[in-house]
Amino acid sequence: MNLLFKLSGEHPELPRAEVFAILEGEDITYRILSDEGEKRILILEVETENPLFINRLAMTKKVGEFIGASKDMEELVQRLDGRMTAKTFAVESESQAVRETLGEEIWKLGYGVDLMNPDSRILCFEDEKEGYNIAVETPIERDFNKRKPHKRPYFHPTSTDPKIARVLVNLARIKRGDLVFDPFCGAGGILIEAGLMGMKLRGCDISAEMLEGCMRNLEHFNLEGGIIECDALNIKDVGERIDAIVTDLPYGRSSFMTDRNKERFYSDFLRTAKNILEKGKHLVVVFPDSVDIDIGSTVFELREEYSLYVHKSLTRKILVLRRR
Ligand SMILES: C[S@@+](CC[C@H](N)C(=O)[O-])C[C@H]1O[C@@H](n2cnc3c(N)ncnc32)[C@H](O)[C@@H]1O
Image 1 (cartoon, protein in one colour):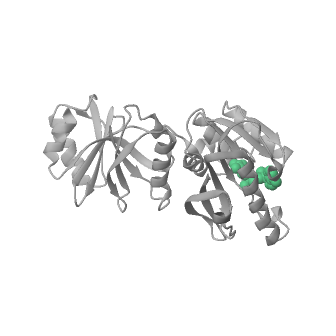
Image 2 (image 1 turned 30 degrees about the vertical axis):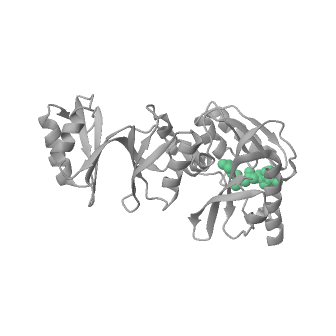
């Protein structure tokens, strides 16, 4: 089937990268039909009839079954007629003129307009080259606001934001049933998102208080996971096959005495990760931007790197590494 993704503008690269990483993790083959960077419209032919994977997306604003692109709106509406099972509809477009014209054409076919609660939402994105890109929206189930750190039973200010946590898990190219390990799990921000996507959870943290809080947070979302108290830099073997490590490393000044300690901490962690991960598996890790580690001299291959602005004095970087 053909799918149209309207990517969010909150980061220049992550929304698009997330789509491709999920498809790779789910083993779904695809072909790019259109990739309009500026308009943030991505159209793919995906080899699946049941695109449940779209519920994983954190940074896609809208997604829908792509009907076609043409400068001739009437022709597109004819194509739409054969694909709509709904009785009522609403048109979504940035342009009021498009909403009115397209709405009227669809209405003429016998469908009723319902702007508040339609059976189908018709998405229309204009682009100079192709004209109108039309899709029937498939709503995405997600509610990041309900999972913000301060809304969980145990709150810690360092906890990873749920939307970012979900993107990190998705970048790890894993799917439902895979086992994900967060060695610095803290209050469980990353584990919660992975658990809600059906992954099996393992975690550890050096702080007993964090672990207790993490347990409460996981229970709150009806999730289970093996989490233990340990120093992530001293793990030799976890005794089971891990499909990915996804983690947000400590970065606060209080965690390190000197910058030298800091650099050593991060390299030691990469050595631990090497012991745990098998060849071909991914490690997605968030570092402070100031840390400079020569990935080339490790057993990891740098697949992707993104800069993540947090606030004026803190930018972090996300590295997607594959064990060689
Ligand atoms: C940035 S926080 C992790 C946030 C977490 N992803 C969340 O959503 O709450 C970093 C965590 O690393 C833990 N930590 C620091 N040094 C550690 C070590 N050597 N081994 C394991 N955990 C450690 C801290 O206790 C803290 O909970």
